[in-house]
Length: 238
Image 1: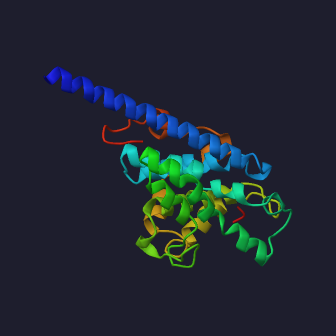
Image 2 (image 1 turned 120 degrees about the vertical axis):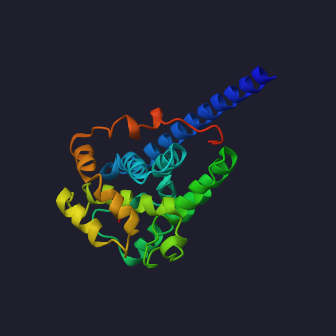
């Protein structure tokens, strides 16, 4: 009897690993599709996914939570597929009306992902996508959530997203020096960002800087291909 139970447990774990890998590959493909629309953000989704997962590791989250952050990073801007190219590729700053249009992308993205997330058991990704532009002080969008009312994963993505945006060339400015990015993120602790996430970021600034300068990975501990999926897991303009 025990052999039968062990067999089915191993089979379940194998199926979960396959499902997790399939979802991850699907998320990466969708992220690449969004990035391909704008050469200024050609690797943005990958950068956000990698940094978000690294933050998760630094925060001491388990493997499943870290992989969830990685997948959410790939998908966080999927709603931009519903925005006109005239806005996404605009050379220069947006008008107030155009910015209001851009602010719709978290809601659009959540609706796009909701059916897939529900079927795959990754429902929380929908909330992360929907709220990744909320601010810790309640001044963000789309619902002006404040503090711990914002899903924790969305608070992580917010830091990774802003970091990638500042480190990249944009139509209206050049990439910002990494030392200035660190100071900016630190100065926004408690206002734009969760102080806990900022503290975690400050602990990996050297690794993050190396990643952006050389394109190197953070190492095996941050590699989604190396993350074991637990048996119970199923898997802008700024």
